Length: 486
Ligand SMILES: Cc1ncc(COP(=O)(O)O)c(C=O)c1O
Image (tube, rainbow, N blue to C red; front, side, top):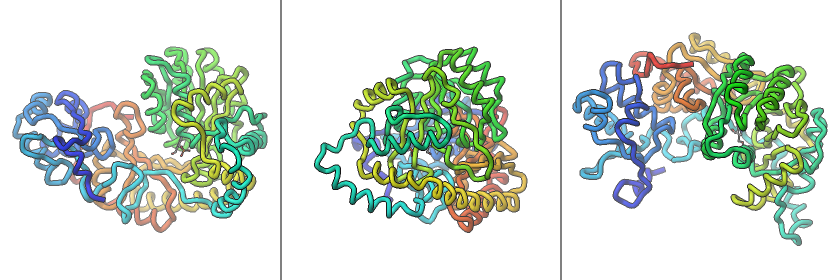
């Protein structure tokens, strides 16, 4: 797709500005590496590719950035020239320079649309399961029974609310349909729950790393973000307890089921402690269960976090996106019935109801959920194992998580270089997600998240490309050192 030329400065487009001080801070310690101009240029291209400096952002004048970095203007002139040569910057006499993405990188402003011949390991969304088309045909037939009505179901289609509630009962958590509020995907559920529960200036506790749009939802409401660490080995429960006691957050947003991005699974005792601490702090818990039905390895799964709830402080967000298909925009929040009513009130500021056809389709598929879970699990196991063995063979100094479920690996690199590696990888036609995307503060430069939603042969090819990009990055290191990385 062609670049959005109409967004150029001076042509009426939506250009933003970044001042020299702020850009210098984001570049950070990268500028201490020689040659300085290249370090600065690579840091800026990495910020653009990670979405931390948006495209169409007007960069500061060379002298302003030079002053903020404490460097000569010639160094910044050379850095901007490199960015221009590598198509990360467009300039026009008198109008300044603004960020763009190069032809070889992601062209579309949407993170979901890398060039078609590229391998996207950044977005964790599998293709639809078998049976989706049939379910959709059934749904079309069933629409006949609905078209005489108004078609708005503000709480969700009754039969779908029943089916979702039944699934919780099967998982050991008594639930009535009145406790289910159907949304257009889990993201809407998280956003509405934050909207309802977070006031400007409230502390919100999140995991680091975490799902980036969870961070977005908290930021939107003016929350102060507080984080507690999680690794593939799990949660540091002492730190987590301390975080609740110190900050008394209004809300904690957590992903205990095949955590995105580390793959960690919280055990029953830890879930009990989590709810106990939330109660002590008088915090609400938003529990994102969008990965809960994605177990890969067999074994007993812990009860849902809400099973430990005694006073209605847990809001559980679920979705069919990962189990069935992301194109089916159906998610939900499970909460107390009064809370469901309040969520519905908030929703009406944004939209009024979900698609009846999608909800009918989801209801059909939920009737077959055990078969579908088994199919997804087989597929993900095959993909995960292929990716792990390719990584072990081609990139033996990387250390990867071995998740028992979910869609992603969290790979630790020997050095903090994720952003420049991800930048180089794009030139090799593969898109990993660099660790800082999953943090609140630009840390996590030692990590990459790799989705295993593509078939094994594609993943093996992707690892070859990653290995080439890694060799290139090692040969031209340019990423920050000396900052605090986890
Ligand atoms: C943890 C988590 N929450 C929410 C979502 C959004 O899901 P949905 O497509 O149902 O909105 C995702 C999708 O990647 C996710 O990984």
